[in-house]
Image (cartoon, rainbow, N blue to C red; front, top):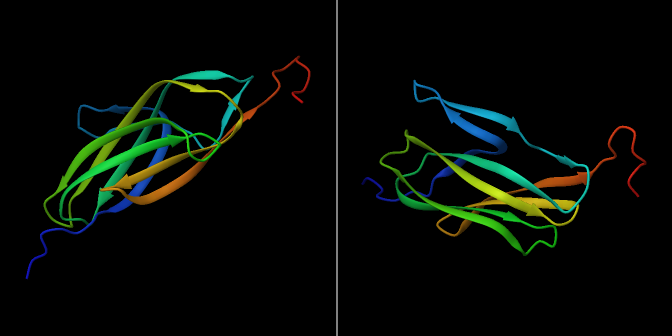
Length: 139
């Protein structure tokens, strides 16, 4: 018996500055982000990307990526994309691009990755205010 649907595994998820594609089709990930340092808040990011790679599944699915504010419930941005895996040995890479994201406060933001409304991953992205050289420390 061959299964007609197996929920895929999330092989990786990265928040980054940009994703570009080479002529060969390979992706180039620029500026992997684990911590966002800013001179003050509120502040806007002109562009952030989330790259997700799915594997070991069978069927058609809907990926959802959400950027959550430090209150844990407010969704700052979200994206949705379809993906199809004909057999478990295949993989699919999706890139979500978020533009002009307003960060109103410092704190821990979260990236959530879901497939067919099943949470696969939620990871923290701290945003901290740091003093610029020659400026007094931020209180």
